[in-house]
Length: 127
Image: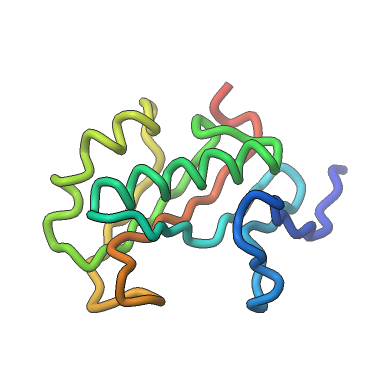
């Protein structure tokens, strides 16, 4: 039986999440549950690129990769986010695509955030 204890994943190259009362991700067994990743970059596409870069780095730190993503949720304050970020997503997410939900919201944690991406990955699922 695999180890199913919850292990916090907080890479030193991302903001100090525990100081704010959360973890960037939790790994239990081969499953990695990632908190939403955002960006302070200028513009939706730039924020999307940085958020996906953060997701990729976070997953790598936890022992997973982008191909291992089984579920993704994208939150955005822009109703046209799906179309505007298609090229960015294509740079990071390849077939077979994860189950994905796109949610348009009134606002995110900070007013300058235009997009937030959270994922669940299963290590080895993309092999």
